[in-house]
Length: 122
Image (cartoon, rainbow, N blue to C red):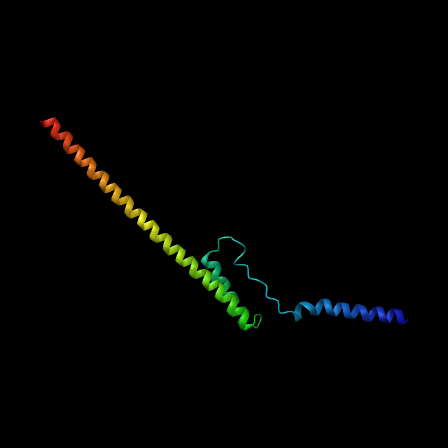
């Protein structure tokens, strides 16, 4: 009888620990937006920021965790926007250079044609 009572008490304590442990921990589960070195879209970052804000407003995240994670994703978004802007500038630069080369080639072709026409006439 005592053995079964002790067994039930131990079983109750163990069950309570298994159920209560996840609820008592303030462990922050990382959001799904940034996994390793995968390329993340801006839409995913904005969605994650909205999820973070919702989690904070529903008291699932502490203020410190919200501010830290929010800052990380905002910095990531700013970095991506800067990279896209630089890429756009580089593409414009390449397009300008290509156009300039094409104009120089056309000019040279016109000069060669005019020389050939003059040679035929004279």
